[in-house]
Image 1 (cartoon, rainbow, N blue to C red):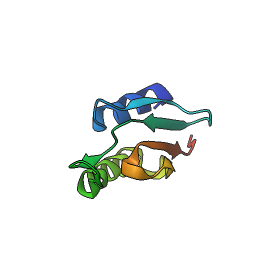
Image 2 (cartoon, rainbow, N blue to C red; image 1 turned 180 degrees about the vertical axis):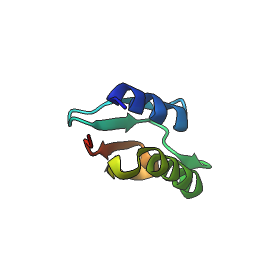
Image 3 (cartoon, helix red, strand yellow; image 1 turned 45 degrees about the vertical axis):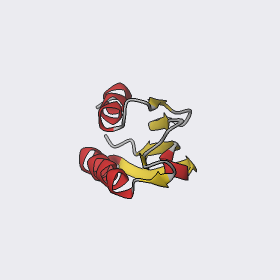
Image 4 (spheres, rainbow, N blue to C red; image 1 turned 90 degrees about the horizontal axis):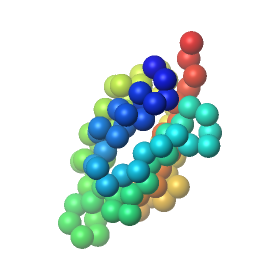
Length: 86
């Protein structure tokens, strides 16, 4: 896998309003949206986020390190960190 294939996967599992690109940290993926993952007007959709995290963990397996939220509110700005396993 290369970072571009990883980014394509993340783009497919997130809503289309997210911008998904390689982060400044090697092997990490930065995801940003003005809308985020919401249920209704102002509440987070924890169930939807749970499915996204399940897909990330399943796809990346031991390569998955963590998701760091730059902005926690509705998961509007976060980075997925992956390990470089050869």
